[in-house]
Amino acid sequence: KLLKKTRDNIILTGFMGSGKTTVGQLLSEKYGYTFIDTDQYIEEKCGCTIAELFSKKGEAYFRQLETDTLKELNTSLTHAVLSTGGGLPLREENAVELATLGTVVYLQITPEEVISRLSGDNTRPLLAGGNPEHKVRDLLTYRTPLYERAADLTIPVTELTPEHIVEEIISKI
Ligand code: S3P
Image (cartoon, rainbow, N blue to C red):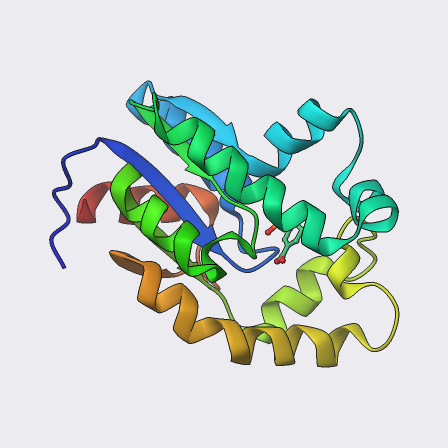
């Protein structure tokens, strides 16, 4: 795929715990770009947390907010690093929208690393209840081809610090 897109935004995708927000912030500072995180954007709009949204309105409602957010951003976004919620690129229409926004960078992580990074985390409703290890593995198995399909560039991040990931991204786009 061509990395030179007509729009100059950089979009980070990947599983929960892959570092999209941390890396996105660092990357935006390096480029002097605006930083936007779709989860933070949605939380500010609704005045509640993602976990509250899931429990009060359900996942389908949240997914629609993600799609609406992307459409809203797409009209004007430029010079921006956009970190996306882990489920956002799974919807085909969202993946199409991301491709028009700019270069999509997939931060690829192993299930073991996700499990170790997110142990004790209670902000991710999709991993709450049941066996979080099984959930991470099942979700990653299902999602991996979808993340890959939506990406211009894949960076394996398991062994890398956020600073190294930023360097990798800058050297490749
Ligand atoms: C989700 C990931 C979360 C958040 C929501 C659903 C997912 O974002 O959007 O809990 O479906 O993977 P992070 O990837 O920032 O944790």
